[in-house]
Length: 277
Length: 270
Image 1: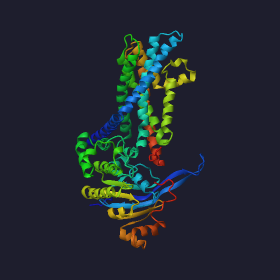
Image 2: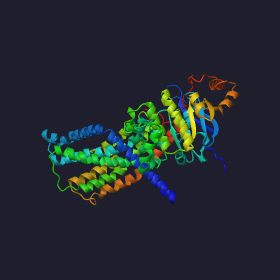
Image 3: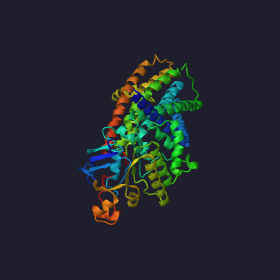
């Protein structure tokens, strides 16, 4: 029992080490983070102004609601994309810095390693999303009718597990293909963007894409968050979106760990940890 | 009392699969990187493995540090099977390689702090130990918070030694730790390795292509060539065995190649 407690404490310390390392990196790259944040604000504004642009071109739509729909899509995609990217770059960044062998030879379990990356991604993602939402709102003349931001936050929190799990699956790609693995991860992210209804309802998609949207966690995240913020739906009212996220998360994390473990074994058998590229 | 060896390697084999030529779907072949290597290292001993680039030295270090899976034979560290119980072995081993390998924007203290957590060391422990260890390796206190990228290679390598020492390894794997260092830094690192061995009872496997370094630091020396361990013994024993007056001559007689020659068949070997 004491042995188990000791092992658990070591894992927890290692998990904290991963979070700590990423905080150091954010501090050391703070000006790059500021520049990236400004880019995200500009990018988000480009998207949300589309609603006003359509009206100016003679289109008929509820500009306020369309702006909010686009704003939620852009901000939530920024959050999910950040989680996905941070977890996906677990291997890629360390390979680039040359530290990957030291991390993989340390007595730190892979779940503690990957979940540590996920935990940091959620902490950083939440902070960045709140700032992004606030910064973009300054430029917009929109009003919310009784939004339930707490319910939207719950949807977002639950969806994070699914994205951490999918990120683990794509994090393995640089282990298998040092040269192109990271780009393959971005392709997976792009596919989720297309089928999940980030900027349009999934009902406009071709039927086969709609089938794919059913298994994308982003579909439920966006739907749930929009219902909470636009319609003021409570947590119980968005349960229809929460339970699929719980199911996808419960599957995605163990599958992500399994896929990563298989990739690690492959890399250790073929000497792929060492290669830089 | 049983004299359990610190390292026991028996018929260890590692192959890499490589594609012939430049054809994308060309035939594959197995390239042996280590071929039935067997040896033992006693607790507290320092063994140097000499070999040219591509002889299999780094592959051996990577196998013992759980970064590669083997294709045959066995390896144990203090009686623990390296391939069956990698986590237990990881707690016993640390490594210093030719590249210092750090997050280059982060400072020495930051790099040491987070990596110590992976070995279960909490903030309270590292707050005291990191300055002590950096002082031990002769790292200037006023540069502890500078980014690694602003430090010289010699200083970076001292931080790498500090990182290894911080986790109190009982087996230290040194893979060309002084390659590329200026003579003064080289001597400082070598002095620290001696000190570490004397004060911390560490067992050391030193892989190098520096004959003088091997002779100065090791109790026994092995020659690894094309993945085969040709011999392992004291310096005089090796000279005698190969009828040579110097270690360099012994290497030439054993391998048929001058030590400074590059191995022309290093594909797949570390």
